[in-house]
Length: 429
Image (cartoon, rainbow, N blue to C red; front, side, top):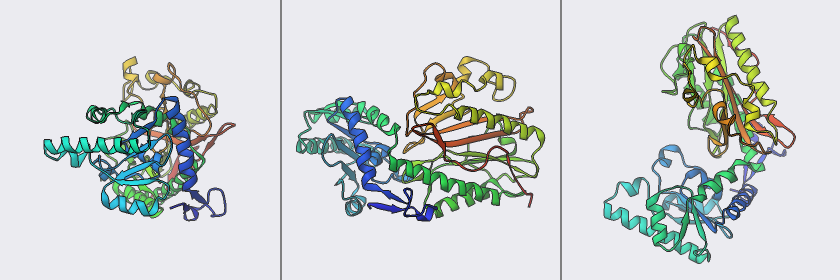
């Protein structure tokens, strides 16, 4: 699995975006991870989260249902030498055939579903064996006397590693989060490829959205298209009519039938290509959009574009959010009724921004109440998403727009291409 042909996603194979070089991807990620390990004084990191396992080994992130089980997949990243990936025996056997640049071992569930569902005596035995397995490999690598990071602050796992004679710190998670903040060239290829497919998902939505169609019918068509293009959908929302303000976050879609003269917006977040995540919003209208809705869209769009002008290396998240209106000014007299400083802390899914990568939310993460006081610095090769929103004056409909953006050496590149300057109008039939 050294190369992946992106030609089917619209990138000619003989262009820089045409092929993903997995070998280079791993080399570049390991260089970043090990730079951070040295800063934290770590000789190794035990990775228990699927995101960090993928980052350190190129093992493809597991699908959510299996990932939620936990404990069957983990990794060990040494400061030098081959990373070690651990998996249940069937998957491990397959991974040995397709990942020649890392070492694969059979896993022992020292935590997670198979561990927790076992008898207490079995749990104690499994955790001890898991810790000894890690310690044994570190002795082999001559790193057992060095500080060992772990990316979860789990007292049972940390205690087991200490009993195995290791000096353990939870700083492993901090080191890898900081490493993942700046994307490598091949990681950026993945994110660009993903945005290209999401453009097509919005085209599918536009062709499907008509009066009388249900939210779940639209969602099904969009998910089907994404899967056909090689994308794994882990999330997304289709929201219509009165549920567009305040946004109904209790479900990804409903059986509600969409009527003429209604707003629909979609958030294709957490769609995944090679584990890299999307976050990309657009708003639609069935029929001819009324004046107050077009004006709301214009206002929300201008907020986004003003913020995007500030996206460049050296600027901070404060520079991005300071032009946005205050939350209580916007919504103190209409839902969601933001009236106090404490209420503002709950607006982290309103006008906001966040890093994207193997995790949906990676540094920097910012909204006004936090970024104005504690800004984070922007650096080249960050990938971020920026979202702005507001409701019509009567608070009966909402508009949301979100772009996916790469911070470049000289500024930024918006990689989400579906039009947003005007609300997308679709015919009634």
